[in-house]
Length: 83
Image (tube, rainbow, N blue to C red; front, side):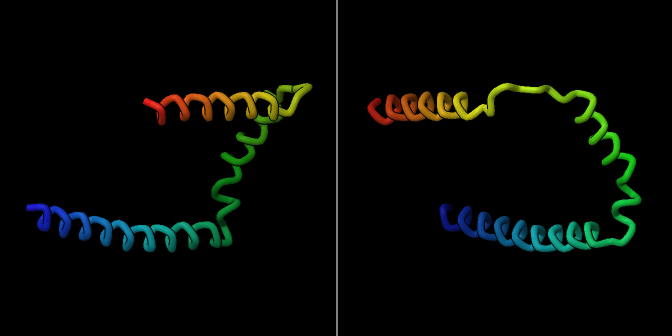
């Protein structure tokens, strides 16, 4: 039974690996297309305009909050390991 499931899993992994290669090729071709920017210009312009219209000036970089998060994560992880 386990051998059958193992074979099924190997088939799924193989299928997704092949699909990933195909999808990567498709995406690469889309990005390399000479008209890519023209096709997506409106969306890109809207995204950039939104960013400009909704900019929030901060007096901090966020590194302190990031370090606080990392310390909390480390503390929570050590509690889980002890349990």
